[in-house]
Amino acid sequence: MPDWSKSSLIFIFTIITSIAFCPITANKPELHPSSIVSQTSIPYDRDATGSDPLSKLPFNDSRLADTSRGVIPSQVHLTYKTSSSVIVSWSTGQGLIHSTADTKNQHAAAVPTSTVWFGTSPGHYTTQASSNATTSYQQTYNFTNANPTFNYSSPIFHHVTLQDLIPDAPYFYKCGDSGAGVSQEFNFTSPPAVGAYPFVLGVVSDTGLTPNTTVTIQHLVDAKPQVWTLIGDFSYADDLQTNGSSFVSNGSFAHVPFPTGTYQPWWDMWFRYMQTAIMSSIPLMPQHGNHELEPQFSANYGIGLDGGHQFQSYVARNPVAAVATASGSSSPLWYSVDVGPAHMVYLSNYAEFDVGSDQYEWLRQDLSSFDRKTTPWLVATFHAPFYSSYTAHYLENECMRQAMEGVLYTYGVDVIFNGHLHVYERTFPMYKFAVDECGPVHIIIGDGGNIEGVCKPTTSCLCLCHSKLPLEAEDHVVMHVYNYNPANS
Image (tube, rainbow, N blue to C red; front, side, top):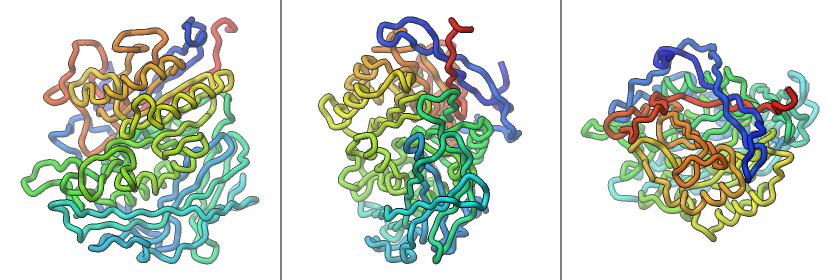
């Protein structure tokens, strides 16, 4: 077995369509592991754990620096919407920490227009798209022991949809305001057509921003995914106190935000790093996790958006509301997209999910109307897993499993991706805690490199069984889908 602690080998899932019979879907897929070697030689540190936290990248790292000068676009990133449309997002103005929340974001530069110029060759932009869609938010700390001096007002976030893209074609683009300031040129390859093969999906979760994160993202980019998805826990800004420190006064590790709050400028730094590393060049399908909750005022977790007191950074920075609306969802916390040969469903275990809830009814409607002939792969994601073999987070998402597992099973979901637990694990097809050939394969990929470190099979992460499940973590998964029928080979 390879020494994963010293190797830059990454784990790939090559996925083909098989002819194995299942009463739910006659072409139930099989998963076949293979490997690819990344170009990076930097090792991933698997020794640090939650009790011995990793160091985040330092604030003075040049890759995190704000060079936007106010109105020049920064934090540029792409979000997948449809096979022929991608949303370009960026920020202008400065995030500001101050004692009184700036409800109108008057600290930011005057909002410039939002325009993207793009075309299929460098420096030659044949089309432009504009939008009035902007978002912003405030993070306000009014709860006991919080210091209001560290309240935060965000930059202005711009979101422009590029439409009528040619599938799987190179595009070059700039964004901004022709009078106030325009970005450098970026490029990306447009998404594949719906139903097209082969399809390469990158999957990562629980990233944060540490030296391990940089290795994870480089591994992912080297695998050349057409699109990628982050299954929650982006920046871990809530593992920092409102003054930016990751340690409380007694020296112990400071977890989630009660009563210390979050350090919102870390979100800005995270997106500035990811702009160059991956996000301006490969479209993302975002998912949220517990580290996106970031509750305000009471510092206690509520349900869903909680009247605008939770998930504010996540929904302002990522244009998930537009993607959700396109799939008939009433909430930015759940949505679906068709991408390549897959129908991808994004669910929330941090919102109401009981039978009869808005999310539950939307899920039933979505699964009953998707076209298995066009998108034969049905993939679901949510942050906290139904099944794992570790004590950490064990059965934490049991209520959601009891409410929704039956629906996912009935409609023949093939794969479920989760994060939350900082390990790599993969199950047999499962339903109701038993192996079932018609159930989905559950894949946990929660070790993207975050500040809390990996989950080891000791202490709080004790493995509950003596199975041969892998106990070391992989940093990401890449799913390759091929249209292959053994009968024709």
